[in-house]
Length: 178
Image 1: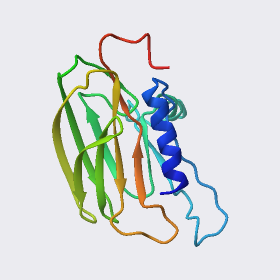
Image 2: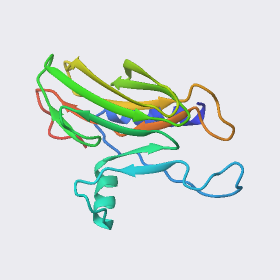
Image 3: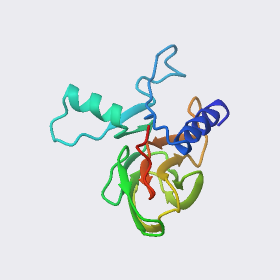
């Protein structure tokens, strides 16, 4: 992944310090063959059926979105969407539910902090669903998702989806995620 992985590692380091900076994407256009328009793009998760300017801006500020250049994702931890916070006791069950589809296919990696705790194969074009129960960690952490392509595509990174985290607030509670 090169520089992209370095950027993600820096962002994960901020999360480990309790600093929540929602990750968002953007695209610009220089050459059609190497910069497809809207790749990558943000998929915002609005609380209401009508998508408004306020909903989009609020979702970006709160991290209720994921970045993608192909896969679609539904990702919930104890009823919290990406950008949300789950208050939970150490060792208590975390219910993680995902549904994902990728036209290119790939592998979904579920992270608890920096550690991949579950993997799911995504055959091209198929919707795959999974539910896992994890034990809450002994200290504050986060759960997030990445999708990596099985095969490298020209002018596209191997990483095809990156979610914002669901943050885990484990007692003793910190004043807040900054």
